[in-house]
Length: 315
Image (cartoon, rainbow, N blue to C red; front, side, top):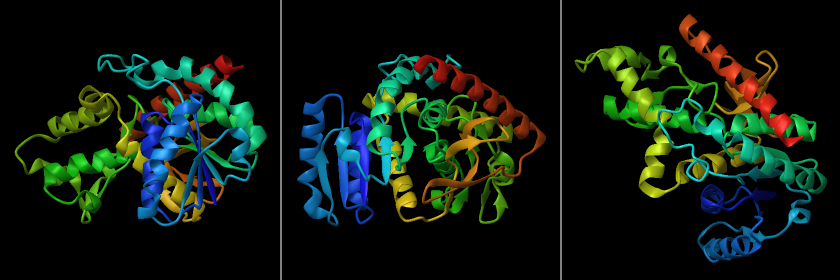
């Protein structure tokens, strides 16, 4: 199977590396970037590593080379550092990138639709949820999803595991709504070994309110912390993107918090989603407290407004 990656900046390159390293899921990866020299260089660099992985052909190309692609991953656009979205005090967060990146998508999508009309499209560019809404509006089908809050949920599990001194894989915890500052942490259903996380955390001598505030702050601003140290947040989301491509290509029906259009909420947001062939096949609203439900309604309202802006900007 063929996979396309549009945009090979930090996130696109990390996604490409993860695709190569996971191996076995696709036979061909086509790399596209408006900077063709960069696309050529990244593809060549990755290609020299392919003998260490199951057989995969990595090459640069143009949109015509996406013909018959099963999945196309879109990472192109202005990142948080370049777009001025790295202030913890700014409640808009990634949404500050919407104007610039909606225009980038307005250039990409017509070419992509013509070349690969049957592909599943995965949006990674920030802010991913309104850009996925824009993409769905433009292409006219539902084979569109964004990486959503999967990376946030993984960070939630890691943060809880560190405090509980257990393996992250043994923690079950979800973040839903926006991949952004209005995201909703489902503390009510966070578990480890069948035990509620909140009760275990209270045994450490701190109130659960204090622990919640610290954990949520660390996760909401994780990208900014990473950017301050390295200049770009790329490896975690690159690994997430490759994992999601795998779930689609293998029709896994994997249950993951990724974002697709939800008719009840009237926008693209993350819920409990079933991901397989064709993209998100089902979406379910997880059990929540009244407080969490209200927070999710608020997050959805923000995303509906942002999606409307994205569609208008790209018109």
